[in-house]
Length: 533
Ligand code: HEM
Image (cartoon, rainbow, N blue to C red; front, side, top):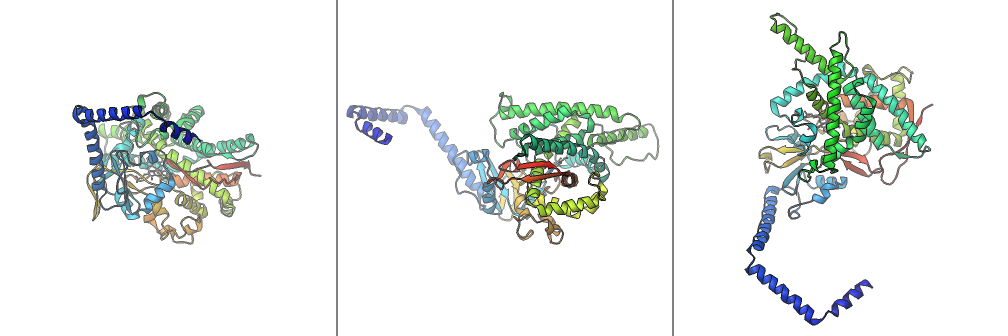
């Protein structure tokens, strides 16, 4: 009907008026072609830029998979704002190396396992690439931005914070956080009339609390933990691949909110570092959290240096000889831990509860094994030696991390032309992204890769496929916490299996994957928790 009206009214347009507009158009055109060089310049320049950008794309793409032409200038920018998991699957399936170009950024994705290893392990050609705003949020001098020798040395000083000895001292504080949050899970369900509700938010919170307490023990207040847990997603949301210049200074933008959040966390962490130094300086103080161990190593190193300086001979060298770090440096470093851990651990926790609820056969075996490891006392706290008697729990953890890897790829930057295969060189300045998901879902290494099957780690061949195990990356920047993560997951799974019951209420979106830095079920994980009799 509306179309009819439109057509009839345009048909009735007076002839003179139509003619007049044609004539003015001709006039404008001729003005443009003859007397308006500025327009010409602008249009010609724009066309030139588009053609140049397109030609550069085709040249950089070379023989690898990717669209033959890019959407002028911006490429798939809109899709990049709302990434779809299926989009990544399609991209990986398109070839061992494939590409996209968003604005001026050329991105090469390596889906092949061996090529992914090559990117992770070629420090002469690549370095981890973090979005531009990352330095403003993490701190410009933060250690994760170091490269080569400086990075290796800094990291060497942090590795002793994740030895068995150190990690065993983190477990008691984690046990308390788990007890507290399992109560919260049950109360949240009760408050909702024991009807399903999304638990993803509470899973983010429990992980934030676990991290903050593991890092800072009792130096950090419960209010601060809650505030950080509530706000931390703002920091994640600010880390967009492409953002408006100076948006960090424009009130209420994602980047502005992210910066305010991270500034507040830095200040709180620096305050905790000062409290720790004061505590650890007291005679007989024992380390109970990560920062305690780190500060203890600083004090031992200082004492060693002083004794050497005073001319003493044969002074035993401390195992971790490091310099003294300021409260701000400690804060920055522990913040990088929080940043590296928060999304990945929250994703792992979400899938853990969803999948175990869907698989009562697996949960029953976990309960049996964990009860036996606790000598029949289900209230016994988890400790490190217990891990030896938890082979099935260990297999479940590996399978969870394989089946739903929290990190599906890691962006790197080609710092120079990088001959990744004999026939293709990643151009300098491109982003080159080794993917973890395809290797972890490779049917040759893991038959029926989409089936959650913990037994593949016990009776199957999965354990021997070490090259496919890219859950924690590879090379000089691989996850610092690759031994800590399974340990704290074992503590969580064991305690949950012993003390709580939970039911997953599947929706049509439960198996749909949402990408928010890591992977989450699209419906936010609909669960009901109850205390176990
Ligand atoms: C399920 C949990 C986690 C997963 C799947 C995970 C995975 C990863 C991956 C894939 C990388 C990049 C590796 C590379 O570039 O080769 C990484 C880096 C890192 N992770 Fe984790 N991570 C987890 C938890 C944690 C936790 C709890 C911490 C700290 C307590 C942590 C600290 C780090 C650090 C500091 C780096 C950067 C290391 C460097 O640049 O040298 N991660 N992680």
